[in-house]
Image (cartoon, rainbow, N blue to C red):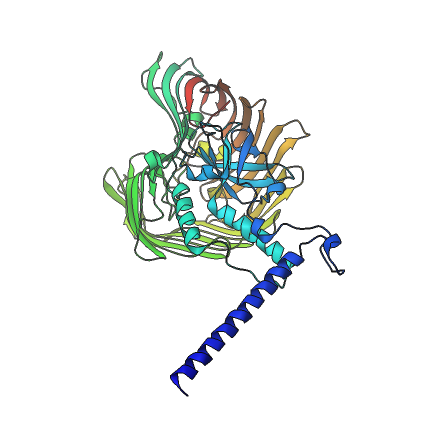
Length: 607
């Protein structure tokens, strides 16, 4: 065939393809348009939707900027709902109204500072409730809430899916121009970049109070209270969170050095407060202060620090060191120090299955003399919310106590706790537990009645059940039998709990607990009750009390009763007052204690 003939054939083929493609495009376009023309305008009867729908090119014309109608401490309302195709889980950013007063979707690209980040929790026809995830300032009515770019894309995809269901056989194109979309996406990511947004919330106050013992001993205390919720400090990944309350100075009108350690003082020592560094783009995690080791929370609270570093996607190694000042720890001693190293493996996630396992070695010292050398293990497996398996174990090397007449122990397991929990329904869960301790504890037994030592009271096997009933009622029960080496028969351990979230629609929160236990370190029982109510957004009251019987070589205070009352009042938007009163009566100790706190609230408080 001649060169001219080849060109002719190519031209004919090209023209044929162009005509076919044009015909297809016109057919697809006319089909789309024809399907949206009102029935009265058609020459022939056609099947059309009952209600005309918007054309696909108008799917993204719904607004993405809304106004805040109402704001409280943790939630707010916006003036859009299903009418703007909002869905639960969508995220928004709050900004102040623009100076020019012009509200349009273009606000998202002006780079205004984000006051808060929100997540939609409940959607109505023309309004939605959002929870405040993070706040960088005051949130109030009149501000603007802007859908994040991811939520806008999600809404567009949902609308496109609905449209495709109505018109299943149509010719469509990728939304928008690819080059333009790339530029828009870069602009949106720049405006909504996931850089850490600082949140500063907390309370700082000075406390003044007194303690009066039976026998006429009196003392006065001057102290400080700090409650901190500070995240992403100065735009970094450093956080400062926790609670601390302590005495700065004590003056006594009686015998010097005779001031008692009260139940309130003991509870104050169980605080956690510290700096943590957690960067999703960094393999290093750091903690400094009084805190748990996050990879092995079964270890005692440490006053010190830890460092962890990821060496792979699933493995982390690290070390920790500090003192062990928490009186609710099993091995508590105010002069004890601990140091160790660990390796952690993590696989999966909470929405499916997740395995979290830690192994390490540690050494403790008392007055800088080695007291324990032990290995520790912690394993946790979960499958969604339906099943969880947990075990923590410590195995000691043979040792002799540095204390006078402290005794010795051979190599072996010193502590072990295992639990299997099944939650077949959202409101009910069952568990089987096993607790073992080889050595006597050194925690302060006065904390038994507070519930802080419940994990140590049961030994051997036990079973528990938790039920969330309607009307905000919760029920808990645990039963088990234990036998120590000195017991001639098994003993029954019992624990029950009952909670009313809104007692008889009065707004009262009622919490009841009862426990009867028999362990290697002692036996006894306790009952406790707590009643609290938020009278207004600024005023909260609580009264709690308990009765405890404790027969143990660890304590001579075998019987005690206590009652404590707390009133917390926010004075204006920035200040607060708190009053505390406690009465304690025991076999060997009795006192009354009171304190007043005045302080400043900082951060995202509005009332």
